[in-house]
Image (cartoon, rainbow, N blue to C red; front, side, top):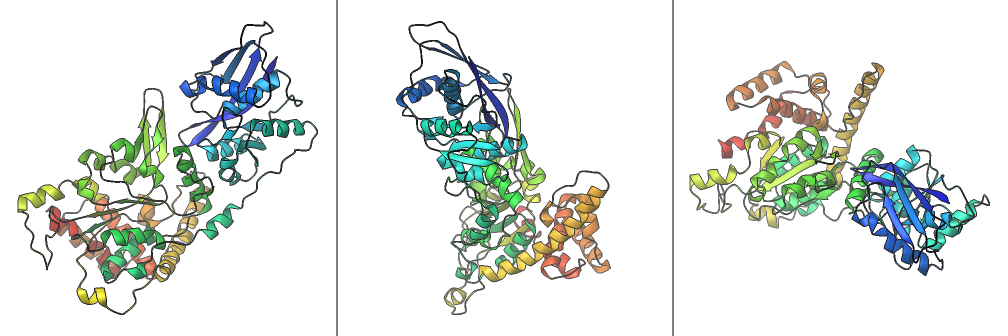
Length: 529
C-alpha cells in the first residue's frame, strides 16, 4: 500500500517542499527492510533505526516486510533529521494505523527520539514560509519550534511532543474537527516588547566626538572604525551602539530570523529575532566562520549580523585573508558560496563597527604615554588593514584616552534614549524619502531596490537626494583633490553628509554637513599615509 506525507528541506535560507512516499511489499520476511531513495544523506539514511524504535516504543508493530521510502523530487539532496516524523507517519499510514487517508494539507517536520518523542530541528521559519507559499494550511512541528513557525501568518501551527500525539491529531482530521488548538503569536507584539537594552550611553563619560560619530553611524547605517589607545572606551562604546539603532521592521525581523533559524542559533522561546543582531567574533575566526561555508553551505557571522551590527575588536589582529573576504558583503550586502554540488547566496547587509589600537603597543599619538614602536613597526601594524577595506568604512574617528576630570565629573552623560530619539527622527525622514522614490520606480514597471538607510543608497539615489549647495560643492572638490580620495570615498562622504543633514532637519546638504562628513574620512591619512 502506498501512503504519502509532506515535509520540507532547507537550502540556503529558503525551504522546498518534499513529498515522502512510503510503500511496502506483501512478501513476509524474517525482519523488515528499509530502503530510502531520493539522494538522502547519512542522517536521513540513519532515520530507519530511529523510526523503527520510535514506532515500536509507541505501541505499534511493523510486520517484517520490505519498506521503500522515496523523497521526491529525487534530484535534490536531502539532509538532516527532520524527515523522521513524516517517514514514521507515512509508515503508520501505509500499514493502516491511521484512519485518515489523505494528509496532503499537513506538513510534518521533526526528529524522533527512540521513545517516540519529537525533537526540534533547525530552519523551521523558512519551512513555515514555504508551507504558506504553497497553500498548505496546517504545520505539525516540535513543541520547541512552535513559536518560531507561528510567527508566519496564514498557517495553523500545531506543536507536538510525541508520535502518538501526531497520530491522534491526524486521525481527528478525518472527523473534520482537529483535537488540538493551533498556536497563535502576534509578531508585532514581540517587536514592541523587545525594546530594552543592557547597556546605556549614560555610562560613558567624555568621548563627545565619538558619541556624535556613533549617532551619525546609527542614523544612516554607516560603517565606523574607532582608533585609540587601550582603555579609551572603544569596546564600551560599540557595545552600547545597539541601544540607539532603529527597531527592526517586521520584514527585516523575518529575514534575520530565517538566517538564525537555518544556522540553528535561534532561541526556541524567542520565536522571532526582535532586536537587531550584535555579533562580535573573536579575532581567531576563520574566513569560513566569518563568511560561511561547509560541504552544504551554512551562514557565517556576516549573515548572522544581517540587519544588525558586526563588531570586530582588535581589527589588525584578524588574519589578513579573513578581513579581505569582507569586501564583497560590505559592497553588495550578500555572500555567495559556491561548492561542487550547489551555489547558495546568503544576505549580509550589516553595519560594521571596528576598533583598533594605532600601533602594537597602543600608545602612538597618546599625550600621556610614550609610544615605544618604531615607524616601520607602526606601518606594518596598520597595513594589516588594507586600503580597499578601509575605503569601504564610511567613518573613521579617533578615541583618545579620557581625562581624569571627565572620568570623575559629576555631570550626567546623555543617555541612549535621548540619542535614539534623534536617530529615529532621522530614520523616519529617510523612510519617507525612500518610499516616495520606490513608488516612482514601481510606477515604471521596474523592480524597486529596497533601501532602509542612507548607507544603502544606489548611485542614482545619491544623485537625487544628495544635491549640494554651491559652497559645499567647492569644499568637496578641494577635499577630493587635496586628500586623493577615491570615487567610492566620494559617494560615502555624500551618504554621510546626507545623514548629518537628516539629523539637523535640513532638506539640502550644506557646507557644515559636508565638512563633518569629510572630517570622518581624514583620520586614515594620519595612520596609513
